[in-house]
Amino acid sequence: MAQPAYDLRERKRTKARLMIQAEALRLFAEKGYENTTVDDIAFAAAISPRTFFRYFATKEDVVLWDERARHPAYDPIAADLVEARPDDESLAETLRALILEAVGAAYRQDPEQLLIRTRLVSSVPELRARMLAQQARGGEMLAEQLAQKRGLPRDDFAARVIAAAFGAAVITATDAWQRDGGASDLVELVEHAIDALAAATRVLEPHGGRPRRRASRRPSG
Image (tube, rainbow, N blue to C red):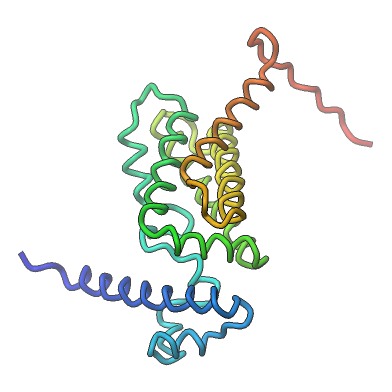
Protein backbone atom coordinates (compact mmCIF):
# COMPACT_ATOMS: atom_id res chain seq x y z
CA MET A 1 0.00 0.00 0.00
CA ALA A 2 1.34 3.40 -0.98
CA GLN A 3 2.03 5.84 1.84
CA PRO A 4 -0.16 8.96 1.96
CA ALA A 5 1.41 12.03 0.41
CA TYR A 6 0.93 13.85 3.71
CA ASP A 7 3.12 11.33 5.56
CA LEU A 8 5.83 11.61 2.91
CA ARG A 9 5.81 15.41 3.17
CA GLU A 10 6.09 15.23 6.94
CA ARG A 11 8.97 12.77 6.71
CA LYS A 12 10.80 15.09 4.34
CA ARG A 13 10.21 18.05 6.63
CA THR A 14 11.42 16.08 9.63
CA LYS A 15 14.54 14.98 7.76
CA ALA A 16 15.29 18.57 6.76
CA ARG A 17 14.76 19.81 10.31
CA LEU A 18 17.05 17.13 11.72
CA MET A 19 19.78 18.13 9.28
CA ILE A 20 19.44 21.83 10.07
CA GLN A 21 19.34 21.14 13.81
CA ALA A 22 22.46 18.97 13.64
CA GLU A 23 24.41 21.72 11.84
CA ALA A 24 23.11 24.36 14.25
CA LEU A 25 24.09 22.37 17.35
CA ARG A 26 27.55 21.73 15.88
CA LEU A 27 28.04 25.46 15.33
CA PHE A 28 26.69 26.33 18.77
CA ALA A 29 29.21 23.93 20.33
CA GLU A 30 32.09 25.35 18.26
CA LYS A 31 31.30 29.07 18.22
CA GLY A 32 28.82 29.59 21.02
CA TYR A 33 25.11 30.32 20.80
CA GLU A 34 25.35 34.11 20.71
CA ASN A 35 28.12 34.07 18.08
CA THR A 36 26.19 31.85 15.68
CA THR A 37 23.73 33.56 13.35
CA VAL A 38 20.88 32.18 11.29
CA ASP A 39 23.00 32.96 8.22
CA ASP A 40 25.79 30.78 9.64
CA ILE A 41 23.39 27.90 10.20
CA ALA A 42 21.85 28.26 6.73
CA PHE A 43 25.30 28.29 5.09
CA ALA A 44 26.40 25.17 7.01
CA ALA A 45 23.16 23.40 6.05
CA ALA A 46 23.52 24.48 2.39
CA ILE A 47 20.19 26.30 2.42
CA SER A 48 19.14 29.93 2.25
CA PRO A 49 18.17 31.91 5.37
CA ARG A 50 14.68 32.14 3.90
CA THR A 51 14.51 28.34 3.72
CA PHE A 52 15.70 28.15 7.34
CA PHE A 53 12.64 30.12 8.44
CA ARG A 54 10.37 27.66 6.61
CA TYR A 55 11.41 25.07 9.19
CA PHE A 56 12.20 27.09 12.33
CA ALA A 57 10.66 30.39 13.38
CA THR A 58 13.63 31.39 15.56
CA LYS A 59 17.13 30.28 16.47
CA GLU A 60 15.76 29.16 19.84
CA ASP A 61 13.41 26.72 18.12
CA VAL A 62 16.38 24.90 16.56
CA VAL A 63 17.59 23.94 20.03
CA LEU A 64 14.22 23.13 21.59
CA TRP A 65 12.57 21.26 18.70
CA ASP A 66 12.11 17.54 19.34
CA GLU A 67 11.29 15.29 16.41
CA ARG A 68 9.19 12.98 18.61
CA ALA A 69 6.84 15.70 19.85
CA ARG A 70 3.88 17.00 17.90
CA HIS A 71 3.40 19.59 20.64
CA PRO A 72 6.65 21.32 21.74
CA ALA A 73 5.81 20.81 25.39
CA TYR A 74 4.47 17.27 25.29
CA ASP A 75 5.72 13.99 23.93
CA PRO A 76 2.80 12.11 22.29
CA ILE A 77 4.44 8.85 23.30
CA ALA A 78 3.37 9.68 26.84
CA ALA A 79 -0.30 9.43 25.88
CA ASP A 80 0.08 5.78 24.92
CA LEU A 81 2.18 5.07 28.02
CA VAL A 82 -0.42 6.61 30.32
CA GLU A 83 -3.11 4.38 28.87
CA ALA A 84 -0.92 1.33 29.28
CA ARG A 85 -0.37 1.87 33.02
CA PRO A 86 -2.53 -0.06 35.54
CA ASP A 87 -5.68 1.77 36.60
CA ASP A 88 -4.97 1.19 40.29
CA GLU A 89 -1.42 2.56 40.10
CA SER A 90 -0.67 5.74 42.03
CA LEU A 91 -0.08 9.01 40.19
CA ALA A 92 3.49 9.06 41.46
CA GLU A 93 4.24 5.55 40.18
CA THR A 94 2.79 6.33 36.77
CA LEU A 95 4.74 9.58 36.48
CA ARG A 96 7.94 7.82 37.52
CA ALA A 97 7.49 5.25 34.76
CA LEU A 98 6.64 7.86 32.14
CA ILE A 99 9.58 10.11 32.99
CA LEU A 100 12.12 7.30 33.02
CA GLU A 101 10.80 6.05 29.68
CA ALA A 102 10.94 9.52 28.08
CA VAL A 103 14.39 10.37 29.46
CA GLY A 104 15.74 6.94 28.53
CA ALA A 105 14.47 7.25 24.95
CA ALA A 106 16.11 10.66 24.46
CA TYR A 107 19.32 9.49 26.12
CA ARG A 108 19.62 6.36 24.00
CA GLN A 109 18.83 8.18 20.77
CA ASP A 110 21.77 10.62 20.80
CA PRO A 111 23.43 11.37 24.16
CA GLU A 112 26.02 13.74 22.65
CA GLN A 113 23.39 15.91 20.97
CA LEU A 114 21.26 15.81 24.10
CA LEU A 115 24.24 17.02 26.13
CA ILE A 116 24.82 19.96 23.76
CA ARG A 117 21.15 20.93 23.97
CA THR A 118 21.13 20.60 27.75
CA ARG A 119 24.22 22.79 28.07
CA LEU A 120 22.67 25.42 25.84
CA VAL A 121 19.43 25.45 27.80
CA SER A 122 21.40 25.75 31.03
CA SER A 123 23.63 28.60 29.86
CA VAL A 124 21.38 30.72 27.61
CA PRO A 125 18.72 32.57 29.66
CA GLU A 126 16.16 32.87 26.86
CA LEU A 127 16.43 29.17 26.09
CA ARG A 128 16.01 28.23 29.75
CA ALA A 129 12.95 30.48 30.05
CA ARG A 130 11.40 28.90 26.96
CA MET A 131 12.18 25.41 28.19
CA LEU A 132 10.65 26.05 31.62
CA ALA A 133 7.51 27.48 30.01
CA GLN A 134 7.24 24.47 27.70
CA GLN A 135 7.76 22.07 30.58
CA ALA A 136 5.05 23.80 32.61
CA ARG A 137 2.57 23.47 29.73
CA GLY A 138 3.59 19.87 29.14
CA GLY A 139 3.19 19.06 32.83
CA GLU A 140 -0.31 20.50 32.81
CA MET A 141 -1.25 18.45 29.75
CA LEU A 142 0.15 15.29 31.29
CA ALA A 143 -1.56 15.95 34.61
CA GLU A 144 -4.85 16.45 32.78
CA GLN A 145 -4.51 13.13 31.02
CA LEU A 146 -3.60 11.32 34.24
CA ALA A 147 -6.63 12.84 35.96
CA GLN A 148 -8.93 11.81 33.10
CA LYS A 149 -7.64 8.22 33.21
CA ARG A 150 -8.65 8.02 36.86
CA GLY A 151 -11.96 9.81 36.48
CA LEU A 152 -10.76 12.90 38.36
CA PRO A 153 -11.50 16.52 37.45
CA ARG A 154 -9.44 17.72 34.48
CA ASP A 155 -7.75 20.34 36.65
CA ASP A 156 -7.11 17.98 39.58
CA PHE A 157 -4.82 19.84 41.96
CA ALA A 158 -2.92 16.79 43.21
CA ALA A 159 -2.05 15.63 39.70
CA ARG A 160 -0.73 19.08 38.78
CA VAL A 161 1.37 19.34 41.94
CA ILE A 162 2.90 15.88 41.48
CA ALA A 163 3.67 16.52 37.79
CA ALA A 164 5.32 19.86 38.64
CA ALA A 165 7.43 18.27 41.39
CA PHE A 166 8.61 15.49 39.10
CA GLY A 167 9.45 18.05 36.42
CA ALA A 168 11.65 19.92 38.90
CA ALA A 169 13.40 16.65 39.78
CA VAL A 170 14.20 16.04 36.11
CA ILE A 171 15.63 19.56 35.72
CA THR A 172 17.86 19.06 38.77
CA ALA A 173 19.12 15.74 37.39
CA THR A 174 19.83 17.07 33.89
CA ASP A 175 21.64 20.09 35.32
CA ALA A 176 23.89 17.76 37.32
CA TRP A 177 24.44 15.61 34.24
CA GLN A 178 25.56 18.49 32.03
CA ARG A 179 27.81 19.90 34.77
CA ASP A 180 29.84 16.67 34.90
CA GLY A 181 30.14 16.67 31.12
CA GLY A 182 27.78 13.77 30.56
CA ALA A 183 30.05 11.37 32.45
CA SER A 184 27.19 10.11 34.64
CA ASP A 185 24.28 8.01 33.48
CA LEU A 186 21.40 10.45 32.97
CA VAL A 187 18.68 7.87 33.62
CA GLU A 188 20.30 6.88 36.92
CA LEU A 189 20.54 10.54 37.93
CA VAL A 190 16.84 11.02 37.20
CA GLU A 191 16.04 7.92 39.26
CA HIS A 192 18.09 9.30 42.16
CA ALA A 193 16.31 12.66 41.87
CA ILE A 194 12.89 10.98 41.98
CA ASP A 195 13.99 8.85 44.95
CA ALA A 196 15.13 12.01 46.75
CA LEU A 197 11.75 13.60 46.04
CA ALA A 198 9.94 10.54 47.39
CA ALA A 199 12.10 10.54 50.54
CA ALA A 200 11.43 14.24 51.11
CA THR A 201 7.71 13.64 50.68
CA ARG A 202 7.78 10.97 53.38
CA VAL A 203 9.61 13.34 55.72
CA LEU A 204 6.93 15.96 55.15
CA GLU A 205 4.09 13.56 55.99
CA PRO A 206 2.28 14.36 59.26
CA HIS A 207 3.10 12.06 62.17
CA GLY A 208 0.89 9.04 62.19
CA GLY A 209 -0.30 9.63 58.66
CA ARG A 210 -2.98 12.08 59.82
CA PRO A 211 -3.74 14.84 57.33
CA ARG A 212 -2.59 18.30 58.29
CA ARG A 213 -5.19 20.84 59.17
CA ARG A 214 -5.40 23.65 56.69
CA ALA A 215 -4.47 26.99 58.13
CA SER A 216 -7.44 29.30 58.20
CA ARG A 217 -7.19 32.27 55.91
CA ARG A 218 -7.66 35.59 57.59
CA PRO A 219 -8.86 38.53 55.57
CA SER A 220 -6.11 41.03 54.92
CA GLY A 221 -6.34 44.56 56.17
